[in-house]
Length: 264
Image (cartoon, rainbow, N blue to C red; front, side, top):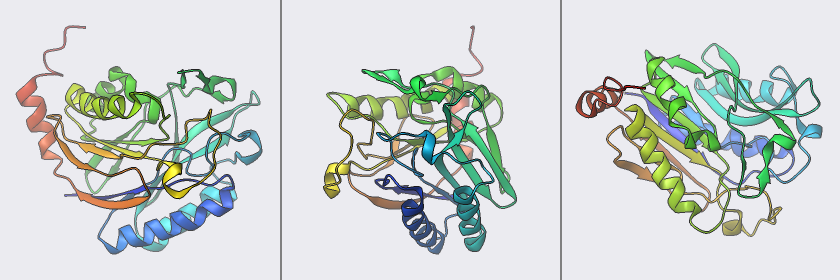
């Protein structure tokens, strides 16, 4: 059964600065037996700053350093970063690196909601993504993607039993409640384990951020395919390693029939 580390943190504005908590988080999670270590969306640099100047390609120095950290500890690292786009915007990319893998998933659904327009500076991705570690298939989604059940069903159709959802959730009235409901709902929709790994609430560490940007609320949450919360963190920086049974996903789908009984 895979052991997965979730590293809830508050990213700084400088990509180089953020390599330190990634290095520390990977080391700590690997020491606790993690095979995969997940960091939030925008782990490279937090929202609320110009993204173009910090964006780097997947073979650039930031992603290459994360790859070396993953290889040093024999794990797969999933971390949010920004990569350049030909149209002058950036892609909101999940870097997946380690164990012979090095690729990116570009966030499909952009956060043009609650008064924020991610599409002003970010180009949407077009293709869902999965990867395999030790015979288990993992799906990928990013933050606002979690509002779209069809993506999670597609990942389940593509063989995923566990979906990793790095996030930098926007704060506001009712937003924590929405986050918790959505993690559980997407798990129920797809029969997958859903692991939401969020940016910590910057207020817990007195970190000044752009108040108009989605910079995190914490409360990383793990739900199984029955909608049961397995693990939930608090608002501040924290690391947890969870051990999950992928077979629970098959049991959930058999019980609920959410994939087999679809009519649309």
